[in-house]
Image (tube, rainbow, N blue to C red):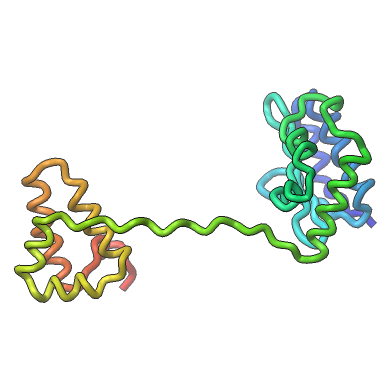
Length: 197
């Protein structure tokens, strides 16, 4: 049995006039393809759930869209053309055929039922920044600071190197190097003031 949410009725009522019939039709099609769907509002837009997030629809100033939560996996299965159409609709005529839409909803349901996960790109590791030669000389002259700096994780070293490299003037760089060596000798990271004790 489908679960409806009156907040979606309110969302559709508040949408632009061109968007209302599109949103009503999308909602009806989702319910027809997935009778067990559960409606809710997430991120302030109508969302449909079946064994997890299935998809959602939204109305904007000049177009509507319907997006599936597992869009990349659906594209791999050959549904890219349908998904592209669902990305920008300005009238009911822009909607794909009912059977085509239902097929994609069923594919999304199957992905959720099997627990398929979308592989999210992991953030890349930043390339190390070479220490400024004057900073290297200052650390060499302060054994305690050099030892502490070597023990810092790469991110903490990078923060000091960026701070010193970003100096526009030589006198600013010299002051930063002097301050950095003093803080490092005390075991402090670049943004130590903002770290919890």
